[in-house]
Amino acid sequence: MTASRARLQFDVVIVGAGAIGTAFACALRNSGLQIALVDAREPKAFTAAAEVDLRVFALSPASRCILESLGAWQIIQAQRLAAYTEMHVWDSSGSGCIHFDCADVGEPALGYIVENRLIQHALLVQLHSAHNITAIHPATPESVVIDAQQVTLSLHDGRRLQARLLVAADGADSATRKLVGIDSLSVSYGQTAIVAHVVTQKPHDHTAWQRFLPTGPIALLPLQDGRSSVVWSLDDARAEEVQRLDDAGFCAAVTTASDAILGQVTASTPRAGFPLQRMHASEYVQARCALIGDAAHALHPLAGQGVNMGFKDMAALSAIILDAQQRHRDVGDLGVLRCYQRARKGENLAMITALDGIKRLFSNDIAPLTWMRNAGLCAVDRFTPLKSVFMRRAMGLRSNLTEPMR
Ligand SMILES: Cc1cc2nc3c(=O)[nH]c(=O)nc-3n(C[C@H](O)[C@H](O)[C@H](O)COP(=O)(O)OP(=O)(O)OC[C@H]3O[C@@H](n4cnc5c(N)ncnc54)[C@H](O)[C@@H]3O)c2cc1C
Image (cartoon, rainbow, N blue to C red; front, side, top):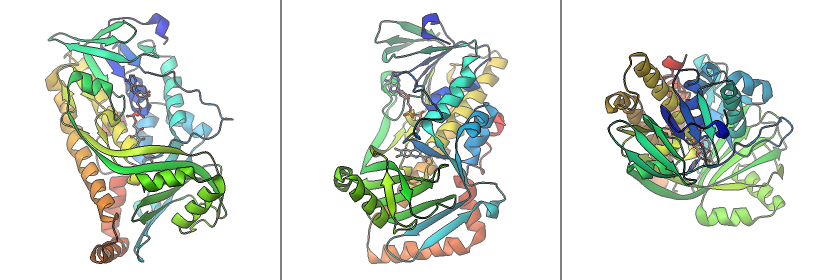
């Protein structure tokens, strides 16, 4: 699995070796299909002694199931993760709150906080023994030519990769999506998410805490070492001010914004900021091309759904491709790829729209709206059947898309 053994002729070329592109390659390992996995960067090494990656994800039980089927979950579990069994969400402008408990849906956890770097490491370990995967990095796509028989991807270093199918998994600003000419609708939220890991006075109790403020939500997610990971979405101007604070000022600001739910914040790692946007591709497929993960959709991180949606995309596409291969069908055929679009686009659009609505609902202080959302939160909290529906949807348990991976 090295670039030096790179072949020029493949069945599938994947651009983007983030969590989703690597998981997709993993699902096709030992399939008999020849796969190229291209990325602009070398993968970052994971060591147990290294500081916890600033990029952590709240993974749903559905994502856990997919990673288990790929053999990666076992590696993640042996390193470090934090299961959260409860979730507490409340509104800064009123008394509305909602509390979720995994016991209410008979699951051992609502989700798991896992580092991006560890997910990629676990998947790469699985790829090392695969004979049909060629990793090509650092490399970026320059142009794409699609004809009836194949797609040709030219890289900036002059290499040309030919395949029956090109899969874009190169994130929300996907160069591959643009090169193949698939449009997308993208709107900036005018917000930046600041992330850092913090030490708090009180234990996190294996609970994910989220407080909605008119300027954006702040979440405190439990880490295995007892610290919490802060994901604080703020209007851009305020985010800049917060980024400029010294450590003591930042800890004080997080304490105030989180209403000191875990007591004082006493220490923090350096911070990173991520500009937030909503983006949806007009099509997930065209002849010989498919988009998965953030290359197809990006959304506000307030419900921690982006990578979970991406895992379902790659599970659906890999199942459809493996099925096509078994039936001796062309894996780049538009008819085959449309099955994937039908399976995923509607569900993803519904999630993007719902989260957009929630973001707007909580972004202002107009009195009737504040009253309405507080009343709504309390009502859902008391009405157990509806609460269970929300929980199961967020946990990815409602859909049967993970079935092919089970
Ligand atoms: C603050 C924040 C918190 C979040 N928290 C959660 C959460 O709790 N749960 C959740 O489900 N989601 C969360 N998300 C969303 C999540 O980060 C994304 O959905 C996820 O990272 C998408 O993975 P991906 O592999 O599709 O893309 P990426 O992670 O963006 O990976 C893209 C890969 O493509 C490569 N690449 C990019 N451009 C090129 C190019 N031109 N050529 C070659 N390679 C290229 C990159 O190097 C990278 O390896 C969060 C997002 C943010 C911003």
